[in-house]
Image (cartoon, rainbow, N blue to C red; front, side, top):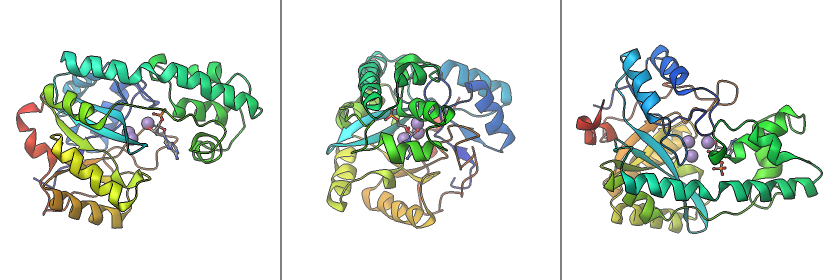
Length: 283
Ligand code: AMP
Ligand code: MN
Ligand code: MN
Ligand code: MN
């Protein structure tokens, strides 16, 4: 059923969100969400709390995560939904994926220091609820709160994107591995926010083809970072590639996210919603 207020993408303090899983569950319920998933970056440590909180709210829940992948030298995010969060292949794969974050963060801080911003590692760490998940978002919050930039978007533009002084290129998981871990754990793999990647049309086609060949089954069509024209473009691509469609706000924080939980248009009726593939996984 396409007409369902499903929100299958958001972040808590377990990765780079500012709300605890319980507060997100309450906010999702208050906003009319009918099916929810917490998809912290490279981590499933919040899944038990999210499920318990969703149950308390009477909110149907799917397990979730968002895995960082490097594809054609660009970082791509693959959401996993409806998996067993204790499955060893997935747990170990996620652990390896987040393993490089500390060293990367230290290198980012060194570069920021050379750009005249001292002590950014310690500064960012204070914002990270989970030190293993220290991310560019935590650096961005530190730089905003210390007055270097007016908002996190300005920090990314000036410091944290490719070619800027605080950007450190990083090799994340391989596409086939990320999709494999999700599938082995019984879940469905979803290409997150495809419009956000700096790929040529040929590379985008390769991403969809290889994702599908590895057993990926869905793509986010309606997300907080897509325009109305992109909803249509990726609906067409979902159909072309025989992929189901997902819907998720990618909510991180009431102060930073322009799209709130559940505040998205419905999926078009011509699409197969990803939750139709996961009916036996809804908890
Ligand atoms: P990382 O995994 O450490 O590379 O951090 C990536 C995170 O940074 C994403 O999940 C977003 O939450 C955030 N992010 C990426 N680009 C931007 C941007 N232009 N403005 C604000 N936040 C961003
Ligand atoms: Mn994030
Ligand atoms: Mn993402
Ligand atoms: Mn996300």
